[in-house]
Amino acid sequence: MNVPLWVWLVTIAGLLALLALDLVIVDRVPHRVTVREAASWVLFYVCCALAFGAVVWVVWGGRYSGEFFAGYITEYSLSVDNLFVLVVIMSAFAVPPIHQHKVLLVGILLALVLRGVFIAAGAFVIGKFSAVFYLFGAFLVYGAYKLARSGLPDGDEEYQENAVLRALRKVLPVTDRYHGARWLTRVGGRRMLTPMFIVMVAIATTDLLFAVDSIPAIFGLTKEPFLVFTANAFALMGLRQLYFLIGGLLNKLIYLPIGLAVILAFIGVKLILEALHANSLPFVNSGEPIPVPTISIEWSLAVILTVLALTTVASLLKARCSPDTRA
Image (cartoon, rainbow, N blue to C red):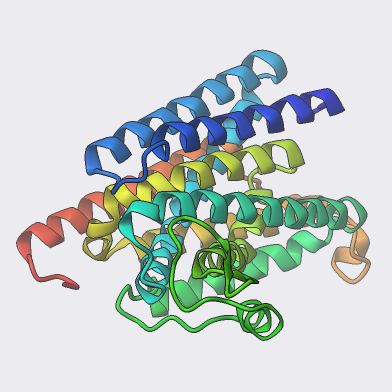
């Protein structure tokens, strides 16, 4: 897949324009985002992703379009566990509802920048050491096992600040209260950061921890950095609106951890099969490829959609039968 530099620049500019449009329209007058408003924006971003996938189809063909959609759906579904942590962070920092949208927007923009660095590093390693797919595959299978055992984060758990936030508080002065939507203010003639800035950094750095699973997973569906980046971008942009839309329904998705674990394990096995098929490790089959079957992107997309549909429907049916589920 040949992607010229100008296409990268135009794509990034388009993504930034979407975020700017969102910021201008929604935050023109700070307010609590309603469910109806969030649903409209979720639909808008899904349509944008569909349109982008269609462009990929026209320009580069159906194979790459399928890889984009598989990656986008996987990243969007795996980002649901981020929502649990976002709920915890918003509660821990007592972010005013009227400013939550702006906090999420800037925090996720920072997260996208960090993921971009992570993606670039992953693409470099893959280009130099194709055998890294053995490690990626094993890591995803292990991650699936942990997720199936422990489940998604509990929205009622206490948030513990990470090392980056603790270092920021030691080095930079931070006020004890919010000053509107400002992240920098002046108190007694001294410039100080506000908790608004700390929350944004908390969202960005916490997301990077979740990217440890999701980035190897999407590299298992496409090896194209352009598709990996854009799939992550569209998933993250729709994530904050999903927070306002289904935040109250998260505890009802009791079977979601099982579904996500199945997806991670499936992609992990897919990676290992592909690594065996193109094997070059001298201590595996004397460095010769092993003629194992591989999984096409069409089958991958079908499995991911089926697993998500089954776990979502099963969760909602269970919640209907047991109203107090995870309440």
